[in-house]
Image (tube, rainbow, N blue to C red; front, side, top):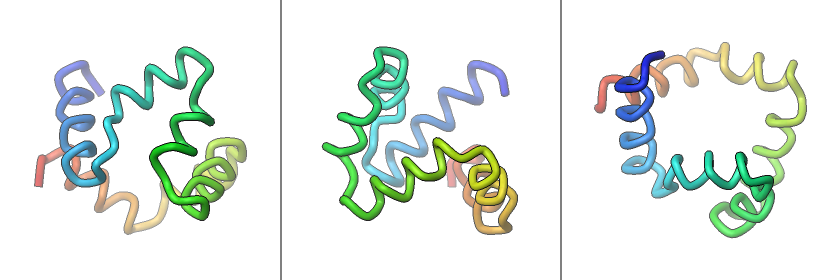
Length: 79
């Protein structure tokens, strides 16, 4: 994924979820991802995301689902 594609992905993700992916990335880079997640997601969504982020097998399983693939396609296309 090149820089332009990544920027489009982040813009579309922000529009669809209301979460600024760039701010999330900055929080992760600064070691503040937990705080960002806790402030921007429900407790249930926060726990699920943390589980996926800390478990490589769970992340791979999630990303291989047809729903995740379709979401990625839509986000990349801006639809």
